Length: 104
Image (cartoon, rainbow, N blue to C red; front, top):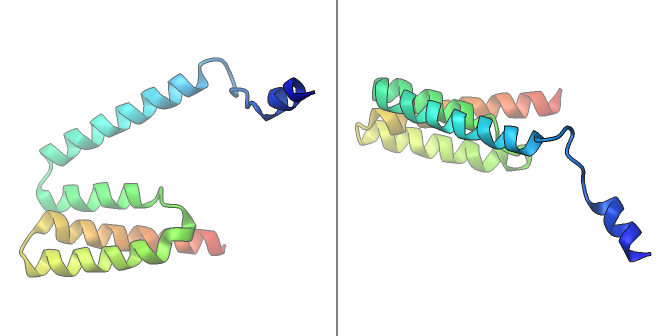
């Protein structure tokens, strides 16, 4: 009986190799963002990376990431760190977008 429960609990892949494909896509995206972060001006790179990664946040944590974005933007502009400052702006805007889509 317990084997039947385990068989039901064990999730099957959507198709053979799906998890390997997802891992390869994830690593590819990480390398792409690493390349972008190194090749673009600091402000643009900070904004883009924080904005795109902010879109992946669980909606339950949006208020905390909104605060983190504001804090990062304020401290970045005060400290004259464009990557941190514009990254905070990007994070803040992405969280507004996530909150908007969740409400809709």
